[in-house]
Amino acid sequence: MTSAGQDLGERPTSVAVVIPAKNEAARIEATIRAARSIDRVDLVVVVDDGSTDATSAVAMGADALVVRHRSNQGKAAAMATGAQVVALREDTARADGREATAEDAAGEEPRVPGHTGPLPVIGADLTPRALLFLDADMEESAAAAAPLVDAVLDDGVDMAIALLPPQPGAGGMGIVVGTSRNGIRRATGWEPQQPLSGTRCITRQAWEACQPLAAGWGVETSLSIDALAAGFDVEEIPCDLHHRATGKDLRGQLHRAAQLRDVLRALAKRRHILPAEDGAALEMSGSEDEHASPPVGSDDPDDERERPRVAEPDAQEQDADRLVALPVDGEFSPELARMLEDHDPAVLDARLRALPVAAPFAPDDVVFLAGIDLDALRRRLEAAPVEEPFTPDQTVLIAAHLALPTPRIPAEADLPLTPEDYARLVAEASAEPTED
Image 1 (cartoon, rainbow, N blue to C red):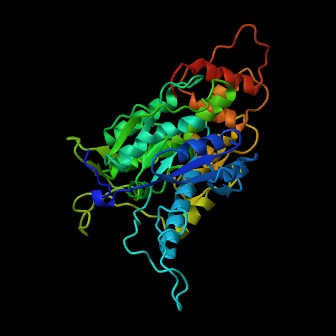
Image 2: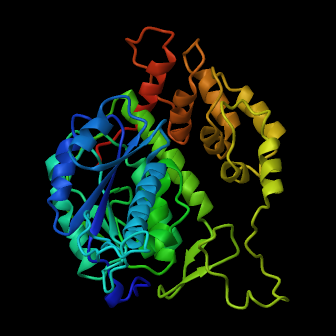
Image 3: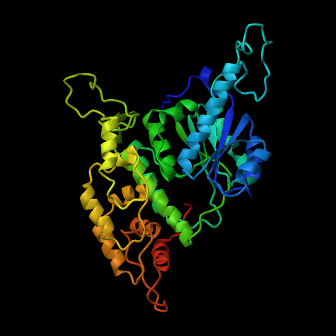
């Protein structure tokens, strides 16, 4: 694929590592140390995404640059914060007259009377660093991400994605991986082996082309689609990386249900991206995605093809206001509100309230459930041998497996089941060994 990335003379020469982390105090120090050992890494940023342990303190003790979210905002938000911190660091270096790749003041010219600071350094390397995203729990194996750096800095790849070996203890169902893989293939013509791999090295030009990121666990899917749609070179690179695997227990299945929700949401926003028949270019139809290239002739005022629609602030507020009656704990962002614009709020409200579920839903859960057959979900929940109401998390998990057969209730089971036990049966009934 032809790369739309930086010219050879503008290729990055150094790398900033960004590590989103939540409650990883036991592992973060080893991960930082391994990341620093990678050639041409000169900055490590840890984004503490609402940890309740000593993650921030341990990371600062390991000489990482640490920024902290007061509350958990999700992986995509942590990645965006880390990239912003790197950019601010480089902007400061330029303003101070220091080389962008140095932590100290090496290269500064002497202060001159009448000047408020050092003079700019002529000829300093101010090319933005590439970004290497690592999981916080990789520990010593993080050093094995070096081939991703080489691919971006030396081989002209714009986004290098780690292909991991099988992870011991992984208990995924393959549903999330398959959904993301098929969605990326339909959108771009490229079929990745590990579409959910979060360990990636990416040039800043490619990173900027992928903004805004999809929320939560949909971020990897959106990065791949948006980078390819913009013409960047995306490749998978084998790396001997290891991290804590998500198991088959209810907690692991709830995690994968949330992943599926976010991946489906990311794909829904990018369904307008279709591969050209000859595979050489990507054609965009009218859409809401700000990265979509306008179709040929769209500058013609007489062109009647659909154009991207950008909601005005007042319209965004109205979109959110029309959803206030829904059983939701929190406010809909303008982005989430737009994703519900094709749904009648009164009908959606009635169907959500008809579910045997206790406590309100999160706004992003409502967006996911809006795309589900809620009448079928209600029948599935009502038919379950359960007397207590389900929690929103359990409901999302069951909704994510709604297309699968009703789970078999073991003969020895004590009835009625708890909602948690029933949700576990749903997850176990669909579980198949995979590398998810």
